[in-house]
Structures are given as structure tokens and as C-alpha cells.
Length: 119
Image 1: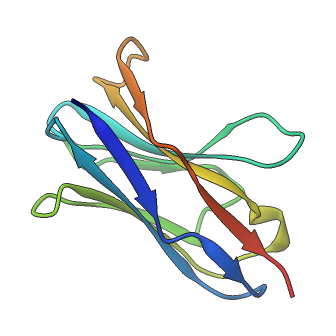
Image 2: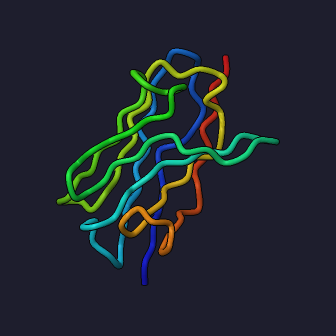
């Protein structure tokens, strides 16, 4: 059974940092695009960061470039999202996503973790 479980969310002040983790079970990262999405209240879900396990290539939304870093820990079967210089507009529920071959035809989602950036 495939499972994605996020952790690491919480309340942080503007300018602070958080590290989100997504523990994957039931499958291996090989041939999967691993993604972090977020959804703020009243807004559509948006892709924040992407890493393709085959070649390690990454992409980021313009709004987080230079502040967020996505990585894979193959030993722990975990995808991490390091978030620095957080802004109030980063407040959202963050979701981990696994997309087989990056095609959108076989996709798994985690339950989400809340990130709140506020003073």
C-alpha cells in the first residue's frame, strides 16, 4: 500500500525556516517525480517544487526560487523541502505528491501539513 506522510509544518515568524519531510512507503522513488504542492485558503493548489528521481533535476515556482530547496534521502525514502526566509504569503497547507514518470497518470498524495508564517 502506497503511503505518503508529511511532517514538519507549524507556526514560524517571517524570515524564519522550516523543514518539511515526506516519508514514502509502499514504493521506491525510482521513475517517480516527487513534488511539493501547497494550497492557501481560497486559492488553487500550486506546484512549489519538483524533483525527478531519475536524474535529480529540480524545478521551483518563481515565488520560492532561492528560498526553498527540495531533496531526496534515498536511505530514509524521504523527500524534504527546506524552506528559508519564509514570508506570510507562504502560509498554506503543503502536500507531498508522487507522480509516476511525471505523466500525471499515476499519482499519490499525502494528507498535508499546515505551514503558518505570522508574527
